[in-house]
Amino acid sequence: MFRVTDRPLNLQELVDFVTDPEAGAIATFVGTTRNNNEGRRVIALDYDAYPEMAEKELRRIGEEASEKWQLCRMAVVHRIGPVQITQASVIIAVSSAHREAAFGACRFAIEEIKKTVPIWKKELYEGGELWIGTQSGQPLTGKLPP
Amino acid sequence: MKIRVKFFAILRERAGTAEVTKELAAGTVSDLWKSLQKDYPKLDVPGIRLLYAVNQSYVTPDHQLADGDEVVFIPPVSGG
Image (tube, rainbow over all chains, first blue to last red; front, side):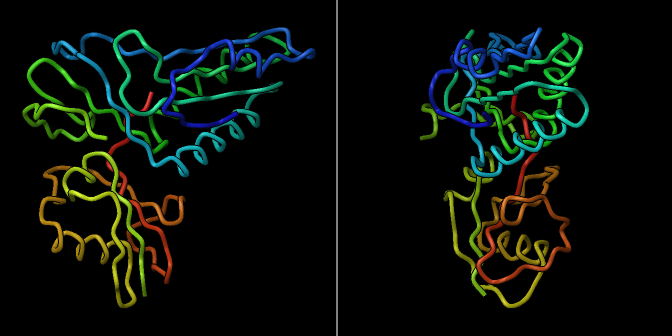
């Protein structure tokens, strides 16, 4: 399962998906919205994605992880749209016979997501908004983009 | 030839549109970007480092475009 969605994420759904009788381990990673970043008080994050390509890149990450580790099943779901403080923006779940593979693939997946998957976060903070990574800040104009 | 361009994130805001169809003589991704910057001067974000995708795969800026291609200019990604 490799997808982007505008709906709240459900950890149990991913754990159920990777549950496998051959597995002795399930590792999960949950990325959440933090209330501060580089000294700014963050109100929310707003994610945009190129969905068709993002899902394709997520599948590629899954294939690469399966070449590096002996895995049973893997699932990655990334949320788009507004994500409030404490809510999950991304969940990864990996099952494997032994724990090293599940931990390794989980870590690998989140690091790769941050490098290659066409998903962008806009930080809405007290006093402004910022597309992370673009160095281009601008005064807060009011509402979230559609 | 007709090229379909989709804008995301900061580039969508700068262009003021999510999608445009561009009529172009033969050319590369880089040529298309230069042409779009004339149509939408605000696309020129100072210091931005772009990647390029044609039909949902990363390509280099010298990639030759073909009729019907879908092109996306990818600002620094920040998922997770």
